Figure 1 (cartoon, helix red, strand yellow):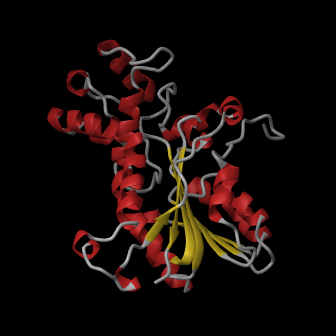
Figure 2: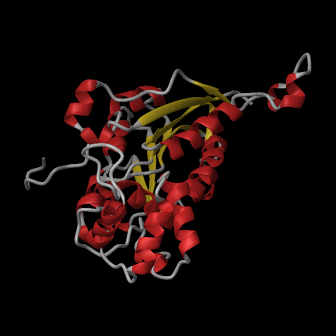
Length: 311
């Protein structure tokens, strides 16, 4: 809680992530998802005067909150942009292939969830928006009120792993227009039950819409190879995922990048330049009991770490 009595966003798996980055005090680091800066401040605390941290975020409010840090600390810079343009950003800085560590925290920040105007919370009476960058693309309400029923069902099923997607899509189409978060939450709750006690029936639907509206899975698939390109040999990639769809993408990417292509695997020797790009570091990590009690939103967080192999 800050001085104004507001609950602050606590970064998930902070110590594990900083350890995974293997901080070099003079290194160059990238926080591809600044959020409210919890991980960034942790990285800066481990850097010396010559170390540098470049952060990105597609949320204008997150970028605005980082400006004060940028003005106060010459080691830090912030950029408004989606991490699917990571390589372009680092190329402009002359950092491509020279970065010591890249971090992705794929969770939604607490200020986004608690601001009713952002439209992320199913307990909010605010507009059904859900865009990370409110200046780009269409809101969740705009899309829901125009999309065909089959398309709505497909998105809710594929992006939310919701088994009752068709029933929910039918209810949405029969009750359009849908404009508020609470209105959609009540509508979903009227046609389906929660899979677990204490979980709202609309949780998976809201997650699906947020993922779809922000093209989160596509952005992640675009960004991971760019992150590897940005790393110097022995640089670290740390990714914190919060649901199985993200984690599957990260796990598959790291696994594939740490293996030889099948034709090369049969050769007696392979040139280093044609070998694996990454080495997976340790096992997937989750927060411990103490952090789960202190920060319940971190319970689903999963951290995976990989290291760039020498070219």
